[in-house]
Length: 490
Ligand SMILES: Cc1cc2nc3c(=O)[nH]c(=O)nc-3n(C[C@H](O)[C@H](O)[C@H](O)COP(=O)(O)OP(=O)(O)OC[C@H]3O[C@@H](n4cnc5c(N)ncnc54)[C@H](O)[C@@H]3O)c2cc1C
Image (cartoon, rainbow, N blue to C red; front, side, top):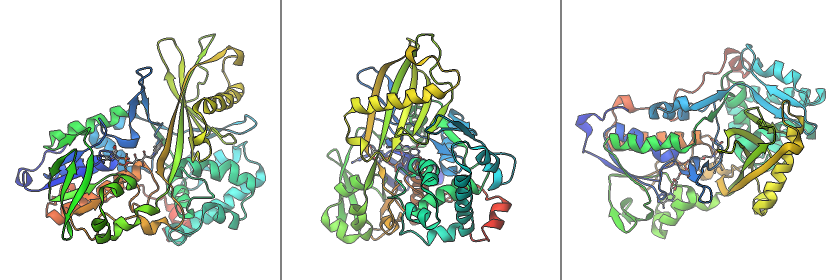
């Protein structure tokens, strides 16, 4: 960690509300710039939605849900480097897919320049017919050619509407576009903004050969973020966990205090890194009247994610799944992650994920487990080197329902996503739901934190050059071919 410059120490203070990724990003950079920061976090640890919890029944440390990143998540990777945990991310260049008939496909980049790097793998893709591949090629070309300007010009239509306008067949939509987008945006093509779906393909797959590579933490998520508290405190900050912010006090056009667990806390800058609904609870009517950013909070809707932890044992002692992960393109169960050894008895831990689970989230957990186990067994029956099905026993299972997992990235929502600064001059907003140009992701959360930090440093006049950073970090450079095809409109 960078040592705070002495000349800035003890000069300015900031309160950071919320210790998720956005709050961590803010606190790390502000303390590094010499601002005296106090982080207020309601839970007993940092990391927010992206961390782990202890299952009271078994004592196991379980991830809230598998969290994955992609090569294009450059700000998040930069944060992991600064926390010293970048080596805990395992990068996967091969992505495994299985269709409804049990055909296994691999998506892996070739040596060709982007956007052609996936072409050989897609040509071999058995889960799509020739006609579907031609559809896909047409759709991808349209996405490349429109550039960033093209996607920015369509914030008000759904991705499904755009796909239909591009004459994409039902099969291509269901077996490809929807599979990628439902996981990436945690929303269905029928509900999500075309702009952000197209961004996923432009920036996550087409522009750069490394962008699609998937990073999966090789350690429980908690191990990534426990370091953050130590780093903030090592820089002179203070982290108050198990402490809830209750309300702001407003004087004229600025915040004058924050009430947290009965204490009154004051600072030069107040950074909310809370989810939109938690922030709404802290703002009384005069505050909402004073700042248009706070008048939009009711417009956000949420979308659920189900994480299903399954523990399997086979009679011959072999693992039930050897692949590191599997995408099921025609199943209600969308992703399966291989978490390795489950417990001392030799069981294997598999983690199933169902994004945008609008209907399923209301099901009883036992029914979700039954459904997941059935879909898993179908997949096992087609996987190479899997023990005989009648020798595979589900020995334990648990469902984690995140009914309000992320905000829903619906068309037209851009108007409601606030910038870091606004009418209340010392209140800065961060969080994945802010105006980041990204969907609800860890990368978006870190970008929002970086943007809020820069605004605080500017306003407080504390801006050592070494700590200035573009909210999006370095970013990945689009390939020469992508730039040429996009007609310089990126
Ligand atoms: C099940 C699930 C799966 C996901 N999978 C992925 C994935 O694979 N890849 C990806 O990029 N993203 C994923 N996400 C999204 C990602 O977790 C979020 O976008 C990101 O963590 C948001 O960070 P944040 O800091 O904006 O908000 P949060 O993480 O919500 O942080 C806000 C913090 O504020 C605290 N807080 C709330 N109220 C108060 C209060 N009154 N006082 C003090 N503190 C308070 C909360 O406890 C929390 O720690 C997933 C999310 C979920 C729920």
